[in-house]
Structure formats: C-alpha cells, structure tokens
Length: 371
Image 1 (cartoon, helix red, strand yellow):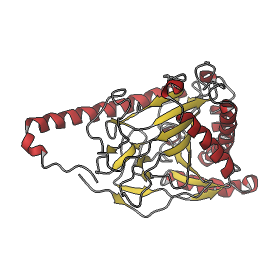
Image 2 (cartoon, one colour):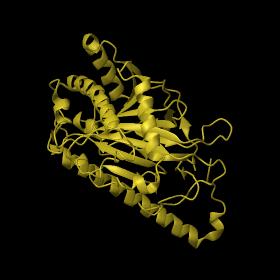
Image 3 (spheres, helix red, strand yellow):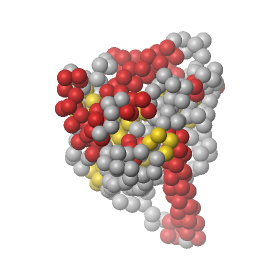
C-alpha cells in the first residue's frame, strides 16, 4: 500500500470585502483559483463567526436526538432528510461513517416529514432557513463572478439556481462524524449501502494509500460547494488531477486544507467544470480520520456543506459547447450513473481480490494494512 504524498501548497484566501467596488479583482482571483486547484477560502463574507457557530449548535442538537426522533425525517431520493452510514464512495467501496441531514428550499421540503418537528427542536426550521438564505446570498456573489469569467450575463447562474422556484434543488447538508475510538481497528473490505447501519464502536475506513478516512475521496456533483467547519475539527484534504469532468481520476499528491475561524472553504463541482467546458476544476477531496493518538483530534466532527444545484429544468451547456446540452435533472442523473458505474467496478475488483486472497490463505498474512 503506497504512502500518501503531501505537498505544501496552500489554497487561496479571497476576501469579498467591498464586493461591488472590487468585483473585477475578486472575479480575477476566483477564476484563477477555479482554474487551478478548484478550492479556495472566502473571508469577509458578511456571515459572522457567531452566526456559523449558532447553526453548528443547532446541528449538534439535532444529531444528539435519539435515532427514533431523527427517523421522523427519513432520507428520501429527493435528497432530503436524515441518513446514517448510507453514502458509499466508489473510491473506497465503503460507506462513509457519518450521519447527515439534508435540507432544501423548494417543493421537496413541503413534505411534512422533511423538517424536524418544532415540538422536538423548537425554532430549528426558522434558524436553518435563515442560515440557508445567508449561504445563498454568498453563493450568488460567486455565481455573478463566475458568469463574468465565462462570458455569460451576470445573472446567468443566479437564474439557474433560483431558490424561490419550486424546482430549486440547492441543499444544506448538516454532517456529523462520531468520536473516534483510539483503539478501535479500522474497517476493511466493502459494504453495500445499508449493510453497515450502526457500527458497534466508532471506527474508520482504510483508504487505498493506507490512511484512515472518515469520508472517502470524491468530487462533488454540484455547481459550487460552501463548506463550514469548526476550528480544530478539519481533516479536509484535496487532491487535484482531473482534466475533464467525465474522468473519475485524481492525482497522487494531497494537500491539507487549513482555515481560519469564519472562513468558508469553497470548491468547484462537476457541474461548473462541465459548464465551463473543463476550464474550472472539480477536485477530489476527502476527510482524513485521526491517526496520531497524541497530536490529532479524536472527538466528534461537525461540518455543514451548502451545495448549489440547479433547478431541474434549467439548460446546461458551456460557452464553447464542448458537451451536449442537458437539463439540471439530466446532469444529476448522468453524474449518478457515472458514480455507480465506478462503484460497481470498485466493488467487483475488491470481490475479485478477496476471492484470490481466500484461495491463498498463506499469502494474506503478508498484506500490511493500516497507517
């Protein structure tokens, strides 16, 4: 198993201060960041540290509820609701060991089962909607800049992601990774979705490079992701290397993403990579689990990701028309099909490797796993 190669590069920190008067400079910085690593951190966004921490406390209160109460807002294929250990990564063939609660703006949230009831968490819906609106405002500032950078009208991406429409699909995902047991063995092998419903002890997954991960390597499908993290709870690492949106590929050098309190870490998704005719890069990233028993943080990790996803019926095609025109619905479906095809190939390879190992029991004793 190869050792992870790290590089000391840093992602750009881009200030949104005086946005209206500095829009040309901000646009240039964003376009450069999007065209290189595909990741950057935002400062001076107008969202105070206290606002972010308040929403984190709301998230923490939700995940602290008994499973039976969280199950009153079950995950659905509309990408809303609560799930636990259900997302399987093609890069590892295993489920991420986390819980998440997906919230949207549009018609998908009109189901009474979509929002946790006020008698369980009073005021949760109002606070979450307020935070989603704040995240949408920051997103629209970035959309304006990226539209200019690609030669589209200023409101081009904003109209495609109009959260006032019933067809809106943008998502706020609240995420919880349980505390890690320093002595628990890392999980090997693969699990199909639903198999690993509730681990008996907090543990993690061994990635291909031998490192323990909480969330396996992946690229986002959306236009743009805004990630909120608590200081001291990062673990986020990025690995550039994709040259086209149709590639399921990453490089071999990882970078640890550092951030300051109040920073919003952003990344380009597959949708914007396609919409820019591959000019902007959707970068693979992961959340590494703690490994050093003395230096690393082993407690619970909370994060919040705001995924900008287009309305189902909007038309998607880059300025040079490198890819055929598709709707938002078609793009999501195609992305899922690529993802599942990669997952199937990964699982089949792991099954083949396991069968070969079972057939030669003496050889398996020499396999080194871990970090």
